Length: 352
Picture 1: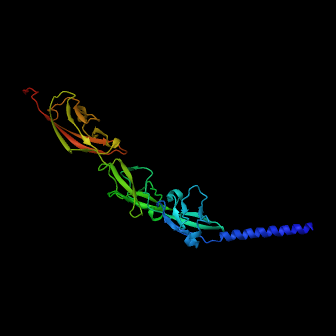
Picture 2: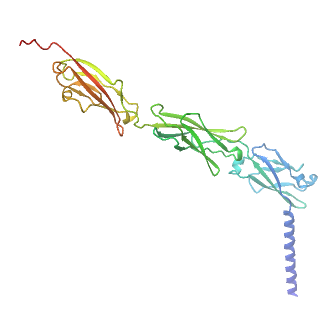
Picture 3: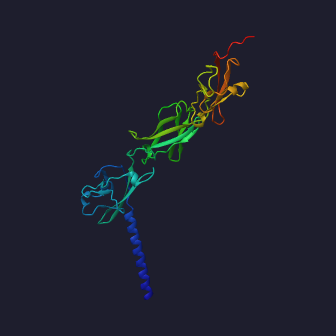
Protein backbone atom coordinates (compact mmCIF):
# COMPACT_ATOMS: atom_id res chain seq x y z
CA UNK A 1 0.00 0.00 0.00
CA UNK A 2 2.85 2.37 0.92
CA UNK A 3 4.65 1.49 -2.29
CA UNK A 4 1.53 2.27 -4.35
CA UNK A 5 1.15 5.71 -2.73
CA UNK A 6 4.81 6.54 -3.42
CA UNK A 7 4.30 5.55 -7.06
CA UNK A 8 1.21 7.76 -7.34
CA UNK A 9 3.13 10.68 -5.83
CA UNK A 10 5.92 10.23 -8.37
CA UNK A 11 3.42 10.14 -11.24
CA UNK A 12 1.74 13.29 -9.94
CA UNK A 13 5.07 15.06 -9.56
CA UNK A 14 6.14 14.13 -13.07
CA UNK A 15 2.80 15.22 -14.48
CA UNK A 16 2.99 18.58 -12.68
CA UNK A 17 6.55 19.11 -13.93
CA UNK A 18 5.64 18.37 -17.54
CA UNK A 19 2.52 20.51 -17.28
CA UNK A 20 4.55 23.45 -15.97
CA UNK A 21 7.13 22.89 -18.70
CA UNK A 22 4.44 22.87 -21.37
CA UNK A 23 2.90 26.04 -19.97
CA UNK A 24 6.34 27.69 -19.88
CA UNK A 25 7.08 26.66 -23.45
CA UNK A 26 3.65 27.85 -24.48
CA UNK A 27 4.26 31.26 -22.98
CA UNK A 28 7.67 31.64 -24.66
CA UNK A 29 6.33 30.55 -28.03
CA UNK A 30 5.26 34.08 -29.00
CA UNK A 31 6.87 35.49 -32.12
CA UNK A 32 9.66 38.07 -31.81
CA UNK A 33 8.97 41.55 -33.19
CA UNK A 34 11.76 43.80 -34.50
CA UNK A 35 11.73 47.56 -34.86
CA UNK A 36 14.35 50.11 -35.89
CA UNK A 37 14.75 53.74 -34.86
CA UNK A 38 17.59 56.26 -35.13
CA UNK A 39 19.41 57.38 -32.01
CA UNK A 40 18.83 60.76 -30.37
CA UNK A 41 15.07 60.89 -31.18
CA UNK A 42 12.96 62.88 -28.74
CA UNK A 43 11.19 61.35 -25.75
CA UNK A 44 7.72 60.18 -26.71
CA UNK A 45 8.68 59.17 -30.26
CA UNK A 46 6.56 56.15 -31.29
CA UNK A 47 8.58 53.09 -32.31
CA UNK A 48 5.64 50.92 -33.38
CA UNK A 49 2.30 49.56 -32.21
CA UNK A 50 3.23 46.39 -30.32
CA UNK A 51 -0.35 45.40 -29.42
CA UNK A 52 -1.50 45.65 -33.03
CA UNK A 53 1.53 43.77 -34.34
CA UNK A 54 0.96 41.01 -31.74
CA UNK A 55 -2.76 40.81 -32.51
CA UNK A 56 -3.83 41.76 -28.98
CA UNK A 57 -7.20 43.23 -28.07
CA UNK A 58 -6.41 46.90 -27.55
CA UNK A 59 -9.54 47.46 -25.43
CA UNK A 60 -8.33 44.89 -22.87
CA UNK A 61 -4.74 46.13 -22.52
CA UNK A 62 -5.28 48.23 -19.40
CA UNK A 63 -7.11 45.50 -17.54
CA UNK A 64 -4.47 42.91 -18.43
CA UNK A 65 -1.63 45.16 -17.21
CA UNK A 66 0.09 45.52 -20.55
CA UNK A 67 3.66 46.67 -19.77
CA UNK A 68 7.38 46.51 -20.55
CA UNK A 69 9.57 44.67 -18.07
CA UNK A 70 13.17 45.94 -18.04
CA UNK A 71 16.10 44.20 -16.41
CA UNK A 72 18.20 47.36 -16.73
CA UNK A 73 18.16 50.46 -14.57
CA UNK A 74 17.82 52.54 -17.76
CA UNK A 75 14.26 52.32 -19.05
CA UNK A 76 14.48 53.46 -22.65
CA UNK A 77 11.01 52.34 -23.77
CA UNK A 78 7.47 52.21 -22.41
CA UNK A 79 4.10 51.11 -23.82
CA UNK A 80 0.87 53.08 -23.94
CA UNK A 81 -1.87 50.96 -22.33
CA UNK A 82 -4.54 52.90 -24.15
CA UNK A 83 -3.45 52.27 -27.72
CA UNK A 84 -0.65 49.66 -27.46
CA UNK A 85 2.09 51.90 -28.89
CA UNK A 86 5.73 51.39 -27.94
CA UNK A 87 7.42 54.78 -27.44
CA UNK A 88 10.79 56.21 -26.41
CA UNK A 89 10.91 56.95 -22.71
CA UNK A 90 14.51 58.22 -22.56
CA UNK A 91 16.75 59.67 -25.26
CA UNK A 92 19.24 57.07 -26.53
CA UNK A 93 22.90 57.71 -27.36
CA UNK A 94 24.02 54.83 -29.54
CA UNK A 95 27.74 55.42 -28.93
CA UNK A 96 27.20 55.37 -25.17
CA UNK A 97 24.99 52.30 -25.28
CA UNK A 98 26.86 50.23 -27.88
CA UNK A 99 30.54 50.46 -28.71
CA UNK A 100 31.89 49.59 -32.13
CA UNK A 101 30.40 49.45 -35.57
CA UNK A 102 28.16 46.37 -35.18
CA UNK A 103 24.38 46.34 -34.82
CA UNK A 104 23.12 48.04 -31.64
CA UNK A 105 20.15 46.03 -30.33
CA UNK A 106 17.93 46.52 -27.28
CA UNK A 107 15.88 43.46 -26.25
CA UNK A 108 12.57 44.13 -24.48
CA UNK A 109 10.16 41.85 -22.66
CA UNK A 110 6.49 42.83 -23.07
CA UNK A 111 4.04 41.19 -20.66
CA UNK A 112 0.24 40.97 -20.54
CA UNK A 113 -1.60 39.15 -17.73
CA UNK A 114 -4.81 37.15 -17.36
CA UNK A 115 -3.80 34.93 -19.03
CA UNK A 116 -0.05 35.54 -18.79
CA UNK A 117 1.73 36.17 -22.08
CA UNK A 118 5.36 37.12 -22.60
CA UNK A 119 6.43 38.66 -25.88
CA UNK A 120 9.90 39.67 -26.99
CA UNK A 121 10.66 42.85 -28.89
CA UNK A 122 14.02 43.80 -30.37
CA UNK A 123 14.70 47.45 -31.21
CA UNK A 124 17.71 48.25 -33.37
CA UNK A 125 19.24 51.67 -32.70
CA UNK A 126 20.63 53.05 -35.96
CA UNK A 127 23.44 55.58 -36.10
CA UNK A 128 23.12 59.26 -36.95
CA UNK A 129 26.08 61.51 -37.74
CA UNK A 130 26.18 63.27 -34.38
CA UNK A 131 29.97 63.24 -33.86
CA UNK A 132 32.81 64.97 -35.70
CA UNK A 133 36.19 63.28 -36.28
CA UNK A 134 38.77 64.36 -33.72
CA UNK A 135 42.54 63.95 -33.40
CA UNK A 136 44.24 63.03 -30.10
CA UNK A 137 46.36 66.20 -30.34
CA UNK A 138 45.89 69.57 -32.04
CA UNK A 139 49.40 69.71 -33.53
CA UNK A 140 52.05 67.30 -34.77
CA UNK A 141 55.67 68.31 -35.45
CA UNK A 142 58.17 66.57 -37.73
CA UNK A 143 61.89 67.30 -38.13
CA UNK A 144 63.02 66.35 -41.64
CA UNK A 145 66.53 66.80 -43.04
CA UNK A 146 66.67 68.67 -46.32
CA UNK A 147 68.54 65.83 -48.06
CA UNK A 148 65.67 63.35 -47.40
CA UNK A 149 64.72 61.57 -50.60
CA UNK A 150 61.17 61.89 -52.03
CA UNK A 151 58.90 58.97 -51.14
CA UNK A 152 59.75 59.01 -47.42
CA UNK A 153 56.61 58.40 -45.29
CA UNK A 154 55.77 59.86 -41.88
CA UNK A 155 52.82 58.49 -39.88
CA UNK A 156 50.26 61.06 -38.81
CA UNK A 157 47.96 60.92 -35.82
CA UNK A 158 44.84 58.87 -36.55
CA UNK A 159 41.51 60.62 -36.02
CA UNK A 160 38.66 58.95 -34.14
CA UNK A 161 34.92 59.10 -34.84
CA UNK A 162 32.56 57.10 -32.59
CA UNK A 163 29.87 57.06 -35.27
CA UNK A 164 29.42 53.85 -37.24
CA UNK A 165 29.06 52.78 -40.84
CA UNK A 166 29.01 55.51 -43.44
CA UNK A 167 29.12 58.15 -40.69
CA UNK A 168 32.62 57.05 -39.65
CA UNK A 169 35.84 58.51 -41.12
CA UNK A 170 36.02 58.19 -44.89
CA UNK A 171 39.15 60.09 -45.95
CA UNK A 172 41.93 62.51 -45.06
CA UNK A 173 42.85 65.64 -47.01
CA UNK A 174 45.90 67.91 -46.94
CA UNK A 175 46.26 71.61 -47.71
CA UNK A 176 47.67 72.21 -51.17
CA UNK A 177 51.47 72.42 -51.23
CA UNK A 178 54.47 71.53 -53.41
CA UNK A 179 56.34 69.14 -51.14
CA UNK A 180 53.89 66.79 -49.38
CA UNK A 181 50.85 64.64 -50.02
CA UNK A 182 48.73 62.41 -47.79
CA UNK A 183 48.38 58.65 -48.25
CA UNK A 184 45.91 56.40 -46.42
CA UNK A 185 46.52 52.81 -45.34
CA UNK A 186 43.56 50.62 -44.36
CA UNK A 187 44.15 48.61 -41.17
CA UNK A 188 41.27 46.52 -39.81
CA UNK A 189 38.56 49.13 -39.21
CA UNK A 190 40.94 52.11 -39.13
CA UNK A 191 42.25 54.35 -41.86
CA UNK A 192 45.83 55.37 -40.99
CA UNK A 193 47.11 58.57 -42.64
CA UNK A 194 50.73 59.10 -43.72
CA UNK A 195 52.52 62.25 -44.79
CA UNK A 196 54.54 61.49 -47.93
CA UNK A 197 57.43 63.64 -49.18
CA UNK A 198 56.96 64.17 -52.92
CA UNK A 199 59.61 66.87 -53.52
CA UNK A 200 62.95 67.45 -51.80
CA UNK A 201 63.15 70.18 -49.19
CA UNK A 202 65.53 73.14 -49.21
CA UNK A 203 66.06 74.77 -45.81
CA UNK A 204 67.62 77.84 -47.36
CA UNK A 205 64.43 78.51 -49.33
CA UNK A 206 61.99 77.60 -46.55
CA UNK A 207 63.03 76.32 -43.13
CA UNK A 208 59.49 75.54 -41.93
CA UNK A 209 56.32 74.26 -43.59
CA UNK A 210 52.89 74.56 -41.96
CA UNK A 211 50.14 72.26 -43.21
CA UNK A 212 46.68 71.17 -42.11
CA UNK A 213 45.34 67.62 -42.25
CA UNK A 214 41.55 67.23 -42.30
CA UNK A 215 39.69 64.03 -41.39
CA UNK A 216 36.26 63.84 -43.08
CA UNK A 217 33.44 61.41 -42.30
CA UNK A 218 30.83 60.08 -44.72
CA UNK A 219 27.77 61.74 -43.23
CA UNK A 220 25.40 64.01 -45.13
CA UNK A 221 26.41 66.72 -44.57
CA UNK A 222 29.90 65.49 -43.66
CA UNK A 223 31.64 66.50 -40.45
CA UNK A 224 35.38 67.03 -40.11
CA UNK A 225 38.25 67.58 -37.69
CA UNK A 226 41.67 69.14 -38.30
CA UNK A 227 45.28 68.52 -37.29
CA UNK A 228 47.97 71.22 -37.63
CA UNK A 229 51.24 69.79 -38.96
CA UNK A 230 54.57 71.63 -38.71
CA UNK A 231 57.65 70.45 -40.61
CA UNK A 232 60.99 71.77 -39.32
CA UNK A 233 63.59 71.43 -42.08
CA UNK A 234 66.95 70.35 -40.67
CA UNK A 235 70.06 71.76 -42.30
CA UNK A 236 72.73 69.83 -44.16
CA UNK A 237 75.99 71.31 -45.43
CA UNK A 238 74.86 71.83 -49.00
CA UNK A 239 76.13 75.40 -49.49
CA UNK A 240 79.75 76.60 -49.68
CA UNK A 241 80.92 80.01 -48.45
CA UNK A 242 80.69 82.65 -51.14
CA UNK A 243 82.55 85.95 -51.57
CA UNK A 244 80.78 88.88 -53.18
CA UNK A 245 83.65 89.18 -55.71
CA UNK A 246 86.19 86.82 -57.16
CA UNK A 247 88.92 89.51 -57.18
CA UNK A 248 89.35 92.44 -54.76
CA UNK A 249 91.82 95.24 -55.57
CA UNK A 250 93.27 97.30 -52.71
CA UNK A 251 95.73 100.21 -52.78
CA UNK A 252 97.89 101.10 -49.76
CA UNK A 253 100.86 103.39 -49.30
CA UNK A 254 104.24 102.00 -48.56
CA UNK A 255 105.62 102.33 -45.07
CA UNK A 256 102.19 102.00 -43.40
CA UNK A 257 102.54 101.18 -39.70
CA UNK A 258 102.58 97.51 -38.63
CA UNK A 259 99.14 96.43 -37.44
CA UNK A 260 97.30 98.64 -39.93
CA UNK A 261 94.05 97.07 -41.19
CA UNK A 262 94.14 96.76 -44.94
CA UNK A 263 90.84 95.07 -45.76
CA UNK A 264 88.13 92.94 -44.12
CA UNK A 265 86.91 89.87 -45.97
CA UNK A 266 83.25 88.91 -45.80
CA UNK A 267 82.04 85.58 -47.12
CA UNK A 268 78.49 84.34 -46.54
CA UNK A 269 77.07 80.82 -46.10
CA UNK A 270 73.27 80.36 -45.85
CA UNK A 271 73.60 77.05 -43.98
CA UNK A 272 72.74 76.82 -40.29
CA UNK A 273 74.92 76.27 -37.21
CA UNK A 274 78.42 74.88 -37.84
CA UNK A 275 77.52 74.41 -41.49
CA UNK A 276 77.35 78.20 -41.81
CA UNK A 277 80.23 79.20 -39.52
CA UNK A 278 83.18 80.50 -41.56
CA UNK A 279 86.92 80.58 -40.97
CA UNK A 280 89.39 82.38 -43.25
CA UNK A 281 92.89 81.38 -44.25
CA UNK A 282 95.57 82.39 -46.73
CA UNK A 283 96.39 80.06 -49.58
CA UNK A 284 99.18 77.57 -49.03
CA UNK A 285 101.08 78.29 -52.25
CA UNK A 286 101.81 82.00 -51.83
CA UNK A 287 105.32 83.42 -51.88
CA UNK A 288 106.99 83.45 -48.49
CA UNK A 289 107.27 87.24 -48.60
CA UNK A 290 103.47 87.55 -48.50
CA UNK A 291 103.29 85.69 -45.17
CA UNK A 292 106.03 87.98 -43.80
CA UNK A 293 104.22 91.20 -44.65
CA UNK A 294 100.49 90.38 -44.26
CA UNK A 295 98.40 88.34 -41.83
CA UNK A 296 94.76 87.27 -41.93
CA UNK A 297 92.51 86.93 -38.88
CA UNK A 298 90.81 83.55 -39.34
CA UNK A 299 87.64 84.59 -37.52
CA UNK A 300 87.05 88.18 -38.63
CA UNK A 301 88.62 87.97 -42.12
CA UNK A 302 90.65 91.11 -41.47
CA UNK A 303 93.92 91.55 -43.39
CA UNK A 304 96.53 93.49 -41.40
CA UNK A 305 100.09 94.67 -42.09
CA UNK A 306 102.55 92.39 -40.36
CA UNK A 307 105.90 93.57 -41.76
CA UNK A 308 107.53 96.54 -43.53
CA UNK A 309 105.86 97.52 -46.83
CA UNK A 310 108.37 98.87 -49.35
CA UNK A 311 107.31 99.94 -52.83
CA UNK A 312 110.85 99.73 -54.11
CA UNK A 313 111.08 96.11 -52.99
CA UNK A 314 107.67 94.99 -54.38
CA UNK A 315 104.86 97.11 -55.75
CA UNK A 316 102.08 94.49 -55.83
CA UNK A 317 101.06 91.48 -53.71
CA UNK A 318 98.52 88.82 -54.66
CA UNK A 319 96.82 86.98 -51.80
CA UNK A 320 94.66 83.92 -52.34
CA UNK A 321 92.08 83.79 -49.54
CA UNK A 322 90.03 80.71 -48.65
CA UNK A 323 86.78 80.69 -46.64
CA UNK A 324 85.82 77.34 -45.10
CA UNK A 325 82.71 76.34 -43.14
CA UNK A 326 82.69 73.88 -40.21
CA UNK A 327 80.49 71.25 -41.79
CA UNK A 328 81.37 67.58 -42.09
CA UNK A 329 82.99 67.52 -44.54
CA UNK A 330 83.69 71.27 -44.78
CA UNK A 331 83.02 73.21 -47.97
CA UNK A 332 85.20 76.10 -49.16
CA UNK A 333 85.07 79.22 -51.29
CA UNK A 334 87.99 81.19 -52.73
CA UNK A 335 88.85 84.69 -53.88
CA UNK A 336 91.99 86.74 -54.69
CA UNK A 337 93.01 90.00 -53.06
CA UNK A 338 95.42 92.16 -55.09
CA UNK A 339 97.21 94.75 -52.95
CA UNK A 340 98.99 97.52 -54.90
CA UNK A 341 101.62 99.54 -53.11
CA UNK A 342 101.62 103.31 -53.70
CA UNK A 343 104.99 104.95 -53.79
CA UNK A 344 105.88 107.74 -51.42
CA UNK A 345 108.97 110.02 -51.59
CA UNK A 346 110.98 108.12 -49.03
CA UNK A 347 114.29 107.84 -50.89
CA UNK A 348 116.78 110.70 -51.60
CA UNK A 349 118.51 110.89 -55.00
CA UNK A 350 121.73 108.95 -55.29
CA UNK A 351 124.70 110.24 -57.35
CA UNK A 352 126.70 107.64 -59.14
